[in-house]
Amino acid sequence: MNSPALSSGGAPAAAGALDAAALRADFPLLADRASDEPLIYLDSAATAQRPRAVIDAEVDYIVRANAAVHRGAHTLAADATELFEDARATVAGFVGADADQLVWTSGATAGINLVAYAIGNATAGRGAPASARFALRPGDEIVVTESEHHANLIPWQELAARTGAVLRHIGVHDDGTLDLDAAAEIIGARTRVMAFPHVSNVLGIVNPVDRLVALAREVGALTLMDACQSAPHLALDLPASGVDLAVFSGHKMLGPNAIGGLYGRADVLEALPPFLTGGSMITTVTLDEADYLPAPQRFEAGTQPVSQAVGLAAAVRYLENVGMPAVHAHEARLERRMRDGLREVPGIRLLGDADGTERVALAAFDVEGVHAHDAGQFLDARGIAVRVGHHCAAPLHRRFGMTASVRASATLYTTDADIDAFLDAVAGIRPFFGEG
Ligand code: PLP
Image (cartoon, rainbow, N blue to C red; front, side, top):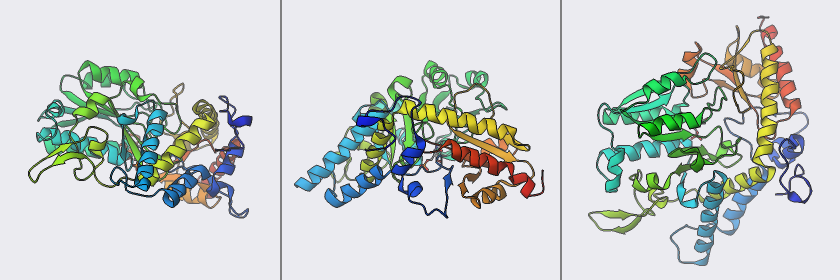
């Protein structure tokens, strides 16, 4: 990738040295806009824009190498398979993992459902005998947090309903931090699974992974971390974090849609039974039964999203070239600028406004007297794209006595000027609606 924002010679930029305005030239949707259609894109937590390198990688695969992977004997199929598996190694490496610890999924939602259904299959006694350790019985407990995205909540509700397990949750304090005292009480002998977000998509707070993993380990519970909102922003070492499983989503980390990753500890992936079954995940098949491949292929039945995997590998190479420490330093600065600015606007209430917590660059807030959708339209009319609604975290909004909020999220291509224009516009919302 030849980014003008990189220091000469293509060496990774040092932490804090990121030039967002220069990076923006790499993102066609942001760079190639007509001057009368300005866009301040503050919705990257929903879907990030893609650099040219990602678009090119995907198109190049389709134009030069498209074929069925892991199946054909011809050269093109071998080339496609090599690109697909290289992409796996690249993306796994980005989160500190080995290639065989990364299962391709169509996104984080698919990854969490895969795990929940695989655990359900262990209950039904299918798969490797080792999977019995995951079986849930009535009265066993699944623990989540009050700050989950629905993707990390509803699959567990369903699993509880199918198995008779009990779903419990760790609450959040008024300042948005997790109630760790309650966590220590709730996670106990009956806890079999604990699922939590690394970073909430509403609060932006980085949760204390070490503490949560330690509590789960003490009782032998399986941990699943939703890393959707951290993978694009923080350098991750998933094996070192101690979590058993983690998911992330390509389209939130500069990559294509319909691709994501499920990371698993080798022993966990080895013992989990499959969820989807069919072609590409078997060794021998008779009319009566089948033997399965080891992970990760055991979880990849059917035709896989190959061009998307190649695109996601290009996305993580882009992030690595910019340098995750530089990305984090830039975004931490933007986060402070945004939060400090919002605190000064009369009638703005930030959700989870804890001081002194590590965060990613997003802020969700209420505009007193103005519905979030009206606020969103007001900003859109000024070329500012934000997310409005409950952001797939309805229980968390209910916790704060709200049904909807406005969320602004920044990333590596967001500039200080974007944040300042956003803050200026936010200050105009309540006066416009006759509220301030
Ligand atoms: N988890 C979190 C924290 C998210 O922010 C999202 C997306 O909004 C998801 C899960 C679901 O991701 P996907 O829709 O890509 O499966």
